[in-house]
Figure 1 (cartoon, rainbow, N blue to C red):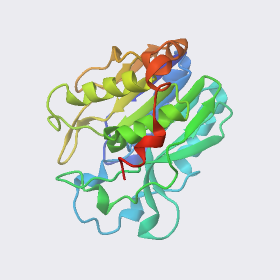
Figure 2 (cartoon, one colour):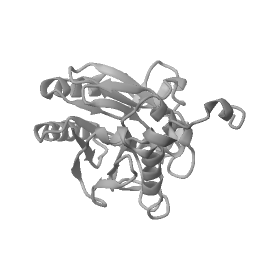
Figure 3 (cartoon, rainbow, N blue to C red):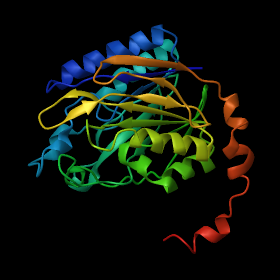
Length: 275
């Protein structure tokens, strides 16, 4: 199976960003990709870099909606799975706005939508002013190419969330991210994801934003890990590109986590330890 991570910059022009994203999806599908993933808020500026928004809902759209409709056509045409990320409006209330990743199947239907559960708030990441915590749990999607989960950006920091995807049977976890230059110590977020792959016995594929925006410069550096925690593909720093990687899901079955760690869990104890 071949996966593709689209590392793409964004302008203030959402229509232009979407057009470039659709072109990239067609290019990836034509190059043999089976699953295509985009970064966090892939087709719009990173809104949470601004504090105290006046009307955040004006930037959001429904699922299904224009963005998912456009990518559903490509998914159906090429028989690919597409993992998106966009600013979702479910209703008319400010409490119905989410950071969301719809997963589109090979027939163009939406398998479901993962919503970011953990919402942060610090300089240039004022996400609590924009998003409501997700209410869809940590779903795993059955696709023709394997069982996939999604951990949206900040959710990757939570071992409980990453383990929930493993327990639900995920074989590959896609991570749409908005990670800026200098946000974390060098190598730390990569080490964190590598550890999640090793501890949970699945592939991880982190797709990051790239490019300079008003208050942040996003790093790129998307990468893919195998179930042993090794980085097997890596995109450049500050580059716009599509990162391709062939993965063999048979490696999941022979991972340390599948053979040992998950087998020897003691879930009956954990509820008394963690609230």
